Amino acid sequence: MAAAEREAEAKGRECPKEEARRRLRELDVADKFSRLPLPKASVLLPLVVRAGRLCLLLTLRAPQLRRSPGEVCFPGGKSEENDKDEIDTALREAKEEVGLPPEKVEVICRLVPGIDKMNYLVTPVVGFIEDTFQATPNPDEVSDVFVMPLEYFIRPLNYMALPYKTSSGYLTWMHCFTYHDHERNKSFKIWGLTAHFAVFLALVVFRTKPTFEVDYDLDNLISSAESKFMNLYASVNEKKKSNL
Ligand SMILES: CCCC(=O)SCCNC(=O)CCNC(=O)[C@H](O)C(C)(C)COP(=O)(O)OP(=O)(O)OC[C@H]1O[C@@H](n2cnc3c(N)ncnc32)[C@H](O)[C@@H]1OP(=O)(O)O
Ligand SMILES: [Mg+2]
Image 1 (cartoon, helix red, strand yellow):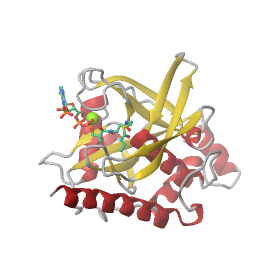
Image 2 (cartoon, protein in one colour):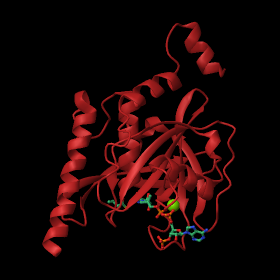
Image 3 (cartoon, rainbow, N blue to C red):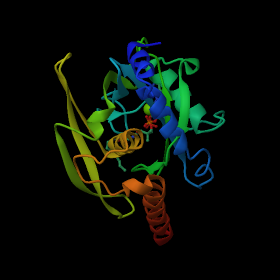
Image 4 (cartoon, rainbow, N blue to C red):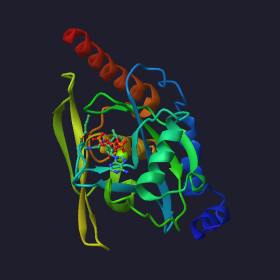
């Protein structure tokens, strides 16, 4: 048992990992959106406890990739024929991209999906990984791997909201965070779909109002996230119909 867990237990309260696990399971959407007729992708949101704090592992995409080169994203990718479900896709991709063995991931839940700029239905799968995990980035797809506190996605030091029009013409705001990793003296820009998933995860885990505006009802997180997603999905379908 880690020091933070022992301390929490001694004080008779839940440790951060246990509390996060419980809150995340309450918002598991399981396969609720799996049958929507869109091409599929999954990402793994890998949570790790470092010095008693919940942190997220993220990747920097290789510069030669056709899609989103040089952008920060979670390990993940498109669904393949042999993948059983979204969890399988996320675990297979995480193994291929950062060398994370699937058996070293404690999968907790699937959260409300998003839709990317190519109209893929992207499912975030949340899992705990061990602090001892050493990433081995696959240079064909990943140029860097970094870990940052999950709390940054509700209390950032450097944040901007950018207006954004989706490919289906749906108007929204996009979160944009700049995180400086002092140990490595490197800065990372986390925005778009990746930031959207990270913010939602932080809201679920901390149940705290962020220092910036979000368009969720924090007292009804799941229903507001689902209706936001269904509006986006409807706009994608409208656009498809108008293109026929
Ligand atoms: C609606 C808002 C839009 C935005 O948010 S843009 C702003 C910020 N960016 C983001 O948030 C990133 C969001 N995107 C993503 O997370 C991912 O693109 C998404 C949707 C999960 C899809 O995953 P990908 O990583 O693009 O897909 P993937 O992993 O299956 O494949 C990536 C490309 O790599 C290629 N690949 C796979 N294995 C390889 C290998 N062994 N050697 C060489 N190349 C390889 C694979 O063919 C693919 O290339 P391509 O994209 O098909 O050209
Ligand atoms: Mg990928």
